[in-house]
Image 1 (tube, each protein chain N blue to C red):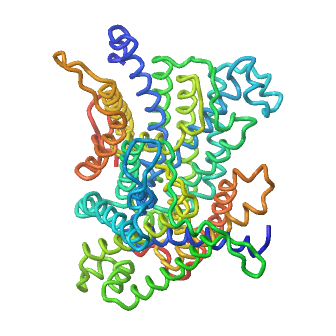
Image 2 (image 1 turned 180 degrees about the vertical axis):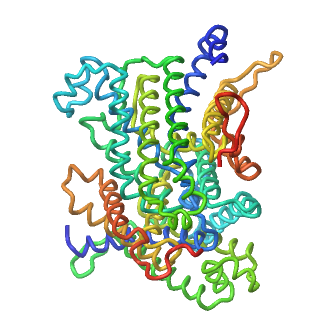
Image 3 (image 1 turned 60 degrees about the horizontal axis):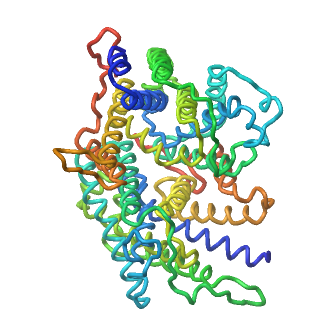
Length: 305
Length: 322
């Protein structure tokens, strides 16, 4: 395998994981809750492409729309589901002053609920759907063949990161989210509306999840009710090795994890390749042994007392 | 105990099965609770130890002459071993403890949600390894022919032993120190508690008990597949601990029985019941959805679980366990 090809693949998977980690990091920032259901938002986005049915063959639903509508449709569906989980599951818990572990378990329950519902409607058999057919081809740049979808993934990720960081830095709502992530109680005293900041963070994480659904399906074309789980785990671990509560940390953590997976995939001997994830996450545990506070965190990482 | 005798005499095979299953899950839930109730850290990774325990026991006792066919990669002494089942269960649970010691040495340095996530990735790691290690785990296919020695009384014996281990630990100074870190990490550290060490001790003990639960599970069903030990089992066992009461040993036991009873009721409803000549049945898959909804409702309206912080004592009556 060519080195440039490998680097593109690594950057592509890294971008995907970075988007997942950022979505999880945004919600963690304002709520101190790891949102288990984030992976299932991605899964919902993918399943929204096809007609809900128990039949084996999936006829496209939103997946058949022209592509600007398709993107808008999936963004809407996923964002609405993200907001719904916040409104109907997490808000009541938060109002009752639930502690971190209760929130964590409830997000696990929400995730399990969404998976069971999709399993119930679509059955557990994997389905296939093809969107953005033009992306599946290979392009040749300076004599190196790379997948167009990988290039698009990288570009979309860069654009989303730029857009989001502008939004978080410049807009009033974005500054409120960052303030809430810094010190929730203090932000509330200074007039940040808690419900709104949190709902907004969920909405943004929904948009990121929708982007990942589209990029993921464009690359693999496969739907499975557990497809969100490995992505979510990658996202969680990305936020942990990046340093919990830091958004740039989440992005870098997710990116490093994806890039490391791809590099290991290329470097491992063939018979060990199926167990690649075991090596990646083993490596993560070793990293955490030396830097339990995360790789990209400096200074005031410890919990304030 | 009296209840069990009653079930044994009157209940017929169906109720006996449910009681056995409930007690196998009790062993796992108690194992998880030893760590979770005392440390306050949510564990998404304890199913790892059930997986390790179940397979380790299979390596020693499985499938008579077929062992070499299913698992050609086992070392010779394991291929030849004719370990008695209880000794095999002990060795298997110890192996689960060893895995906990090695992985916990790293993971127990993390706190809160980061530790929970690291525990989940531990499960992911071990599951991936077992799935791909065809020569000793039969990979993605199932092992069949484990000796079926688990009946209601064996399960009862294991569950009692698990509860005794948990009670001894809870009453020990280790348990007290770990609960101190749960209540206030900073204050505990300031008082000289080595948080990492206390967590690791509880983690290793709880892995031992959870591993034993996995052993029972394998020898109750007679077949093993790696993908059984994944999110479904994590969810069900965690639901037990939470429904009963996250911070109490009694809660884990009550939760194991409550959730098993609930699941079996829903499963029976999925198969259909006759009510006055009309057959009613829930669509299949309703069981998982109902369990998730109930768990969410309990978390919202009674987050302390059914029993809260209370512990049952041997002499009846309840005391506060904090």
